[in-house]
Image 1 (tube, rainbow, N blue to C red):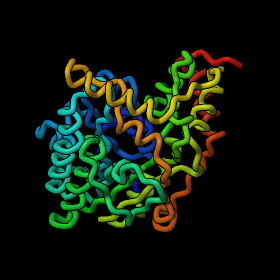
Image 2 (image 1 turned 30 degrees about the vertical axis):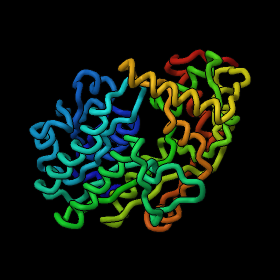
Image 3 (image 1 turned 90 degrees about the vertical axis):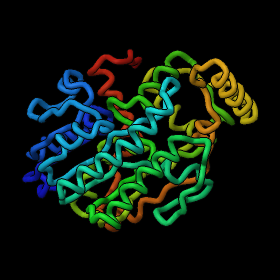
Length: 336
């Protein structure tokens, strides 16, 4: 990865979960790093001091061009993951139009490498093993899936028709320090005894520690074939229940409650209908239930073969690192 140390590198979404880990690693390699961030002060508190900050937004063409000009390598991570209070328009603007803006700027700048960080969400909710040859499903009622698919289409089109030297990586369920979705939010729910598992938590996931994902992203920049995508899944397959039980051990959580699938789906339907009438975001959606109930896995053999990707952090080791971080930061009281 030393080849990156002499490059001028741009990272979008640098103050987010994966972005701050990637940026710190790049700085550690000695690279010259410029980041595009929405809030300069917030980013300055999260990122190494010697990072060049460009305040702006991927949805603003002027700030994107300011950030990407004269770059050798662009890592595009800016992304909106749906939360109960997230506007649909914000998801479309950042995931689709923001990607188009960054791609346009990268083409104009003549970058040497463009790495787009996508997600296995593009494969929907598989019930068997998916790989990079798996056809993307059409899932009209899941905005995150459709916007991530569209973002990849933009990147692939720019490679095919505009000679953008782009490579795509698709991580599975990422956890680790600073993460909300698979780490802090579940931990808080577990601590308060509010975690409920549809169908007993029988869904399948492949948790991947953030350091392994950063390894995969950097390997894609050095070894990835342009125009190709690579799944970066975790080293083991566990049920949703097993994963949350492991997290629960960190906060001394008691047993989790379970509800039948049909009850959970009914509650999600009611929540969505109520949200449409009240104008408030639904607290539970059928798409979210589909995701945590899927029985499929994601194969990373292509990334192993072509990139040298090896997810080394086991779930035991990963949760131990999360424990150490929580104790150091004092974010959540830990019981021994």
